[in-house]
Image 1 (cartoon, rainbow, N blue to C red):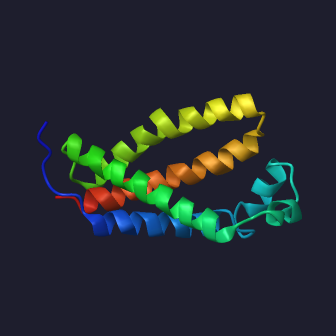
Image 2: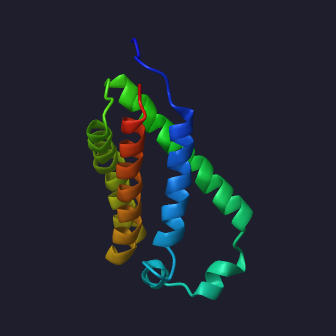
Length: 139
């Protein structure tokens, strides 16, 4: 298997930063934070009780970097090199892996549909933007 082009690590890093920024806004009270908290049937105090922000944000950032890196590898593998192709591949990854996995979790864990919508929409936006960034900066 011959892969063309190099991974643009700056683009991968940018995807991780963008994902964290979107997450901070997405789950804030300005957007969907209150809906998300209500959908998990916990109070904000219960969530904050054992919260370890350094661990949570570090692991989240690392996970976003891994996701962006794998998306970059997939873009290389299918020889995609435009923003449109990046968005298309981001959508396929979201619908084929993220949305399906989250649907199974939603059904078996008894989560509310609002919870599913808030979380899956966040991942949708992140994968679309990551595909756009990686597609634009590939090659």
